[in-house]
Image (cartoon, rainbow, N blue to C red; front, side):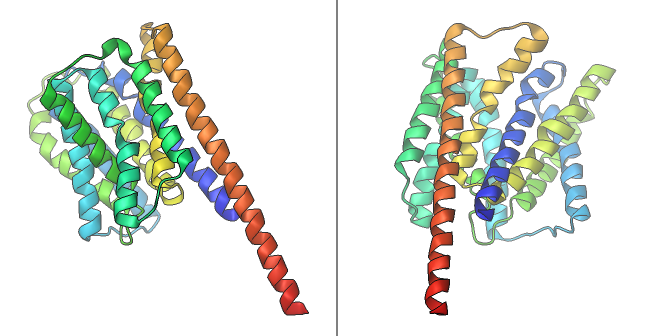
Length: 300
């Protein structure tokens, strides 16, 4: 029962990270800076937050091959996604990046010999279909290179969800290393900016504190208690929530088809987690009965 509760807590933290990530679209509209300046500014703030959290919790920075691999994949996901947005449509980039659950199933099968469950495959298919439906108005052929980069971003994103699955992996250390690198890379570009008025500066602060710092803290904690496939499916709510904030604050409402796609994604993720909770409860009850039977046998 304790394991089932931990998984539920993990899912909640992953959901909180998706909510934090989703405010990016709203805040980015308020910052008239270069993309590298924005990324560097928010990375600087988030790196400080993540480092302070590690110090407060006595979480030592781990540096090994698996942690560095995680850092490279996290950086690769960010870079490829930015370039994909420049070379294809935003809708294509989002949809193709969220092929991540498919890559997770494939990687877990290849590297950890974990065969996917029918529930995982079915839910991934439904969620991917819902995301396509949500962004169908913006879909086009797009640039082939941009589409390929978006798929590559999805593959890197898959590894991010697997950071805690590796024997010596440490997601928090990978995140601190990546954000520190992005901050150093972005500082020269920030110094070239001229608009440091209240709105853009406070937006950068909010991006660093909430959209990056809090989001990655929640994701790191969630990944420790949530299987990679489940975490990636819950995170699929992020692109659905992003336009919601824009609709609330800017009045740009999605179409009926988009709303139908959102309902499919949300419904699939909720049903998936409810089914997982039922399965976990059954396994816990089965294990408890087995322990009870063993204790009775030993008593006799």
